[in-house]
Length: 256
Image (cartoon, rainbow, N blue to C red):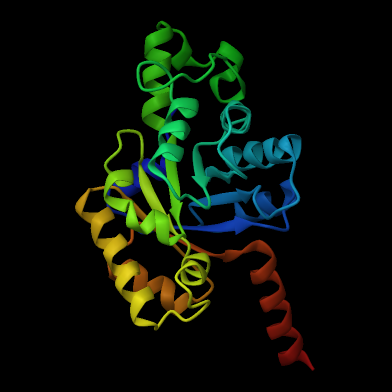
């Protein structure tokens, strides 16, 4: 069980992903013919259930992309189910408190880091994968090491607690959601506002100083390049539906 996203980040590669909002196994399969590194199945805003999410994870695995999910909220059932069906990274929206992240770690990590319920589910080959054959603790350790937990910093409260959150053992990185963060700071969509700029760069600096993964979302190719240049480890660029619509609009304009 090797998390390719984690491997690439540790090697210092520029890692690029996208959100799955339109969804479907065929969409993920088609993305497998690109050089994209990871996909995030968006259970927060997308229309997906557990079974359709699992199908997208399966296709991502077959296409050598890392299968990530953005969950709706932090509950034991929600976190456990996504891990059992094969999520390699869990993105968590709307974080405000340190306690929320401690709960996430407790639900997502096996003993001794947490209290994840024991199961040899899909990602473990239902108990037949090689890494499950060397004792329960080695299985626990492998899962704990290879499963990424990445809270989103998209509220002013999270930004205020960022030093304590990013220092927690079990937190692998921070995903900055600029749109919600700007709204939470009272300047929706105003990424040039002094307060947003100060908060954004403070969070970036804290995450990089802690040696954790810095992940940032953008709809802009130019901003994606800028974020890599400023030291982001991973950029989430747009979504399946946005890229498709933009491409069709451009092609239709050129044809007509």
